[in-house]
Amino acid sequence: MAAAAALVLAACGGGDGAAPTGPTAAPTTTAPTTTAPATTAPMAGPVDYGRPGVPRRIGTGLVAAASPDGTALVVAEEDPAFPEPGCEGQPEPVLSLLPLDGGSRRLLTRPGGGPVRGRVLPGPGDAVALVDECEGFLQELQVGTLRPGGELAGLAVVPAGRGDEEAPVPRVTGWAVDGQGLLGGAVGPVSGDGLLAEVAVGSGAVEVVLGFPGSSVGPAQVGQLADGRYVAAFDGRVAIRSETGELVSAAVPGTGFVILPDGATVVAYGDAVTLLAAGRPPVELVPPARGRQVVAADVSPDGRAVAYATEAGPATEVAVVLVADRRVVPVRARPGRLGRPRFTLDGRALAYNRFGGPPGFVNEVELVRFGG
Image (cartoon, rainbow, N blue to C red; front, side, top):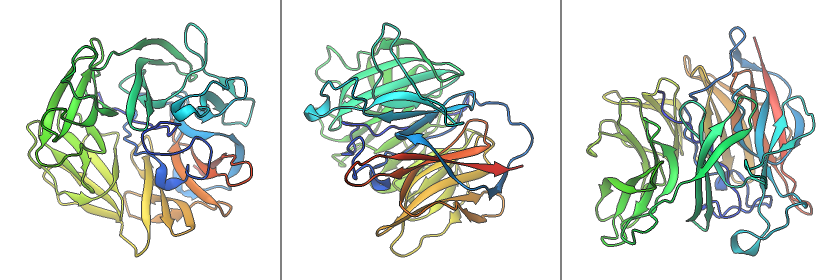
């Protein structure tokens, strides 16, 4: 299979300090995203990513994922119908399906009823994980399936590390390439060293995969390529490592990464946007610029374009860079704090957030369609 997609939702207790709908849910608090869609909607002819249309508002909420059939987004937003306090006693957003045509959203529910919360981590095929955290500590880990229309089915709790006091419990950010485990960074409870660990989907058993001796922190984001090699964002750098931990690519500055649909190429982002592959020199798609940070990115389903969000002081923007010729195409968005770019899974549109400010802190969802 292709490497798993990690479409990350920053909810209350998402481990990155972001409030669900407040001003801290700006691009700098967006958790990293690892993308290599295993299930995509059919693409009706070539897409011209160099010709984005005029964005339009389709609803509200934090963009979390895209439905496999390309007709809707999964978004998170507080709902007064579910006022139960969550992390740190605050209301938590619930997940809903927001149609791309701007129609009424539909609440996602557990198979037995009740709302669904947490970070959304799509994996191989129609597999999906829901990661519920509070201040970086895992509260509940579930796996199930994400149906074509975006509905969740067959959710089951994964008892990560339960009953083993010496097992590290990682912050899950990716799927193992075989779909049998979930990957994350952790700190060894005995050694105090940073670790890359895997949680078995069936049993919840935690296995240490790689160590980072002397680090005292685990990787901020991890993933696995189709050939079994690992990608880790660690200590401000992104690199590809062998299954025994040796570097097999350059370690470039970066805070996060996305995996291309080929399962072998990585886009690292931070100061710049850079292509990485094992045994090859890095290629800068977007060079660094003074005072600017790339804070989130996503890859089109055909691997031909990378959408990214940048911050430069109070200014933010969303743009697309074409992989073939490195041409940067800004999205003609209204001014505001922008972030969370996400391609729809048919590749024909790009969604992103315009983060809300006082007094309402309402996060708007905007959609731009491409030519072709």
